[in-house]
Length: 78
Image (cartoon, rainbow, N blue to C red; front, top):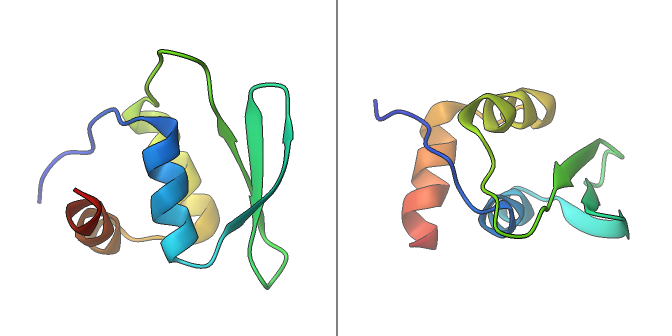
């Protein structure tokens, strides 16, 4: 299994939208997404910065996204 590498925050938002999360609002440099079960996740969007693998893992755990599904969606996004 490949390692999780830093990615652009908008790419992660695109992946999360494929599993049912939709942006509901933005406060400063943080975009809040929510799914139909009202699960919220916050993705920081700082200009010119990528999300670190540790933060990506935390977000994946919050939304219940497994590594296999993450890499599958990441590959389809390319």
